[in-house]
Image (cartoon, rainbow, N blue to C red):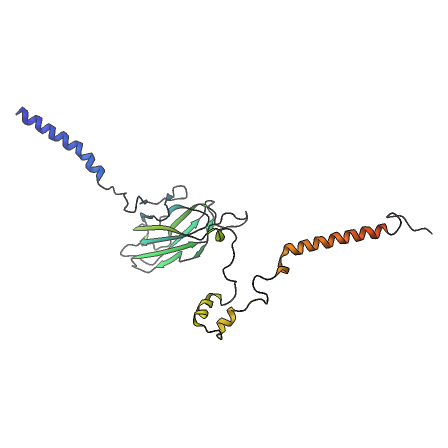
Amino acid sequence: MRAIRVLGAALLALGLAAAPAAADSSPSPEASADDGAPTRAGTSFRTATEVEQGQTATARASTGDYLYWSFPADAGQRPTVEATVKLPDSHAAETWQIDVYDGLRRRQACQYGAATRTAAADAPSVELTCVLRTVRAWSEPWANDPLPGTYYVRLTALRLSTADLGQAVDAELRVDSADMGGAAAVDGTLSEPLVPGIAVRAEADEAKDDDSPTAVLADLEPEDGWTSGWWSDRWIWTAVGGALAALAGVAGYRLTRGSGRPPGVPPHA
């Protein structure tokens, strides 16, 4: 009997020791299949959940909550923020919106994309997209240009019926960037002049239809081309103006000395 008791105690101890190891090896409710991407969102700027570009963050929330994430963006990048909200099986029409703010909490306008969308009644989900402007390496103090640093994403519903408040929703957020290069981040140049019909010039070139109104409109340009000539350079005109001012000063000085008397002395009677 004593041997049986000892064997039973040993088996019990072995089971208690193996239980924590088994618990550690099993996935937790907060685990993510996307390489450690976060599975929750913050509720304010201070508690915004950090997300790396290329990750798909998920969060489970209630309709009416404000969800916040943050991500880094460097100069030359053009971030694209995509959000998907999986709605309840039964709901009324809902309007959802994503807003993007920079590190100074200034709202950044979307270059294009549907940042605000209305989901029809009982729609399974709603998808939102915001393509930001290219992040610049510098900016004037008064400008609202996107600069390198941390950006914040806020996802929320704007218009809800009272019956839909508090219903459970699942949200997904993903941020990717296109590398636009340094020329786009700081000044840069236009690839094409801003003229009417420039968006369809490629179609006209492919069709080789130079007689079409679109092709004629797109081909309008100054006589000397868009690069203009040397006379349009403000630095040359500044130098010419300075030279003329210097010559005028010398001429005035010689004219004053040639009168034969100091300035202010009246002529002899």
